[in-house]
Image 1 (cartoon, rainbow, N blue to C red):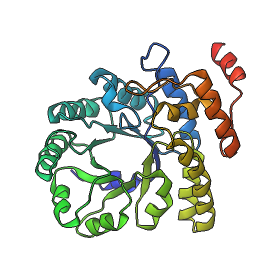
Image 2 (image 1 turned 90 degrees about the vertical axis):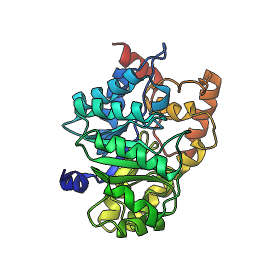
Image 3 (image 1 turned 180 degrees about the horizontal axis):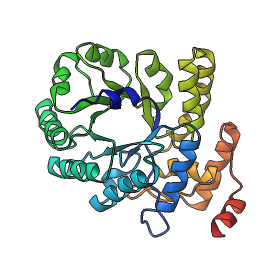
Amino acid sequence: MNHEQSVTSMCGPYSAIFTPFDASNEVNFDALSRIATYQLNHGIQGFFATGSTGEGLLLSYDERLAVIKFLVENFSERATIIAHVGHPSTEFATKLAIDSAAVGADWISSVTPIYHGTNFEGMLRHYTSISNATDLPFMMYSLHGVVDSHRDVALFELPNVCGLKYTGANFYSVQQLVRRVDRPVALMSGFDEQFIAGQSFGFSGGIGSTFNFGPQFYSGIYNNYRQGDIAAAAALQAKINMVTDLMVEYENWSYRKAIMRYLGFDCGHCRAPYAPLTEAEYAAFAIRLDALGVLDRANEQAQTQSQAT
């Protein structure tokens, strides 16, 4: 398949969108709609659905597909939908790729093999099966992995492979890899705190978890950088990195969703093994966010009343 147009249009900031849960720990599609709309209104170009941030491996098969389908049905006219199908089982991931294509996803992506078959041969078999399963463009996902420019060029010989989400800091190794690929490749960075650095190495955009609550910062970084105002882009990066610094202090990913609550979007908690936050924990965290002065805190009482009407 010729995916040149898909590669060319894969640029700018993409949200690794949260999967919100309600009080019963079920997927909250109303909240998903609200946060997706908020992000698009602040410059996000699309969604990376059911990835690490979306708690993909803590969702059932049906839940993962339902989230992807919901985003397609409600936002495909405004956003590019990347269905992350990564799973320890190649069979599971391949089936989810087929079904994601059937419901209208624009791209398929998968992390490298987890737990089983984690060497290069296993990765090659895993990606061959998934990328062969549909006619959609496929984005490999290197999560803290080592990129070997000589070895990994073989991955771009697989059907439909035309993108890489790289969550790492060795941009030079990715640059070396792409030089050995004889066609356009969509490169998306994954370390949010180094989004601007990825731009300087030729990345077309980024996919990140903090894009959920800082979409205006990342769209601003991207637009300013592309317009040549590097100082403005760097200032925005430094500012949102203050929130990232605070976020990564906490092992419990429920604090990440708590930042959405701070903005007025109740996404619930993360599923176990993460723990829900107590009200005291949230209140203490909100005070620390207040002290940063980076994000605008919502009036939660007004927000609750609005949602009830």
